[in-house]
Amino acid sequence: MMKRALSRLNVRMVGVGLGILSILVIITGTLIEHGIQFEPLAVFRDLWQNVGTDLGSIAITILVIDTLNQRRQEEAERQRDRDRLTRQLASSVNNEAKRAAEELRERGWLLDGTLLGVNLSEADLHDANLTDANLRGVSLRRANLQNVVLRGADLRDADLEDADLSNAVLENVQIERLNLNGTYLRGVKLEKPLGSRWDTVIALLTQPARDVDLSRRDLRYANLSGLRVINGVFLETMLYRARLTDGYFSNVDFSSANFWGAVLRSAEFVNCRFVNANFHQADLSGARLLGAHLADANLSGANLTQAGLQNANFSHTDFTDAVLNSADLTGAILTSERQLRFARSLRGAVLPDGQRYDGRFALAGDREAAAAQGFDLHSETGLREYYGV
Image 1 (cartoon, rainbow, N blue to C red):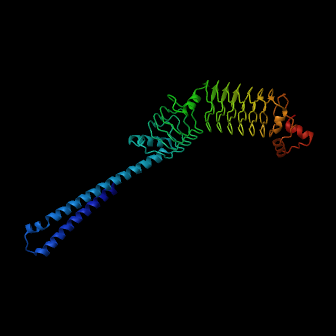
Image 2 (cartoon, rainbow, N blue to C red):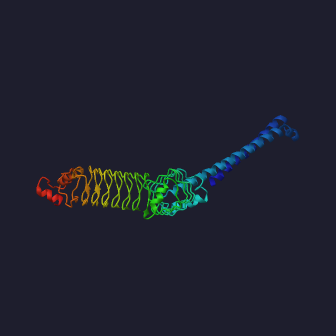
Image 3 (cartoon, one colour):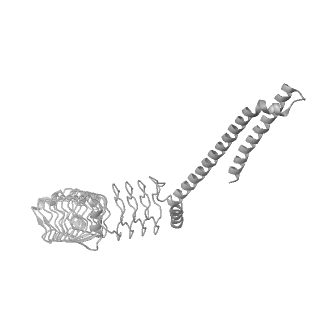
């Protein structure tokens, strides 16, 4: 404020100085023209028109410059405030971020587009009120948005990858081209379907979801950990690198679904169908697929360590490079035993006949692990000791 006052004072001093100078010029010129003895009225007649016009022009110019400078300084100060509040809104300190949101709202900057495209990655905004906020194109990656109120907000083109929206209020938001990859959505409050992506989200939020049809939906990278679905249909659903850890699925048809690289650790699937499903490099360690129908499924490169696969149907299933250490295949249906010859390892697994795997296929992964642990698989003793048979 002091600098602005001094600046305005300097402008006025220049104006006053020019005025005094103009008077001195007039007096000097008059003395030269009329000498010491002259009539003031005659001088005024000589000068009044030019001097009046010039003085008026100068005054107007000075006032215009002063007004423009004042507005420019005020706008610069507003911009500094906007920048400061935007930085605070992106803070990982919750109280600081919430105070910034409140001040932005008070000054009208939460709604007017001030925040378009800003980077709020990893901000801690839990419990913040962002009602009607214009967050178009904003990056909220890995942000903490638990319990945040986004009712009526504009989230078009926003990036919420890996953000935590648990228990957030998302009624009537605009969500075109919204990135929800890996977003936590547990307990999100929605008033109604909000577009082609949100019909999927809504169906996944009911605990447990029943009679869900998510066929051919794109759920790549979706974080659906803990999801519970009963009597659902996921035909040809894209679940590439999705997370379904600790989920529970009963009587769900996943035929032709794509689980490439998905994480399904400790998930439970009861009477589910996976005909022609793709589990390439998926993590199914500790998962239970009791009685599952996996005919023609692709389990190549999948991790099935300690998986419960009892009574599952593996007709024509591809086990190439699959890890089945300590998996339980009791009662499982295979096209032939040859399918398991292409697995990477089977140490500790229980075969369909209920017998513990004894190393009969000499799988590469088993041999490598045995050598690393100092077992001699060329001897009967070493073989039995390593496979526990």
